Image (cartoon, rainbow, N blue to C red; front, side):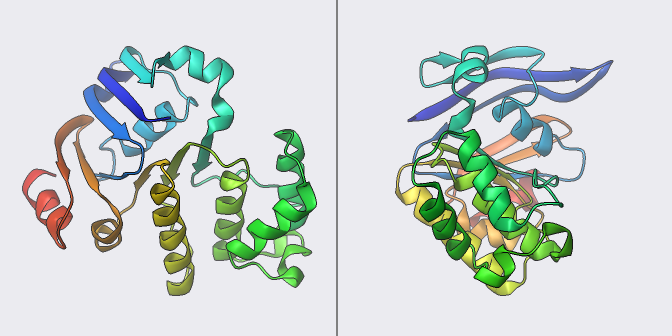
Length: 231
């Protein structure tokens, strides 16, 4: 997947515009930082991109594929990390990843699961414990691994650093940069503007459901300056 194009996308709940006429392009190899205050529409935008919610108006194309076609046939190309980790407390970490690998019909499941557990910093002892015993940070690490299992082309992350210690944040940041370097499309929201300033190559500033500003981020501090001016 090379790009996602949004044209005048709105999401309406009753009489409330959660998003209003947002036009934006996400490109392969870039990390888009979606920034805004609470209620600005960040999560709504990400859930629409993930095909978990439908736009009320406007058009979205994933390369040459419409939003509906993508939702019907290509959802496996999305890696999604949100406040709900989409993992099962009664299973171990290893069992969770094995379940999702089987669900996606992936090959070499055992090796794939072990590789991703190691990649997100979960030890064998951690992997064989029930998720109900995990700390918030361990759950977040497992959620990231679950989202990456099928090697998706599109990575969408809503506050992915929640609960992670400094090392965990560094590990996830390194992973996102690596995946963007491999030509993935990455978009994430975070209240940690310093983190986004280090990671993002594009800023998308939302204010009251509207896209207030987009800008390439190519120098240190550029995202912070952009946010101060337009958020």
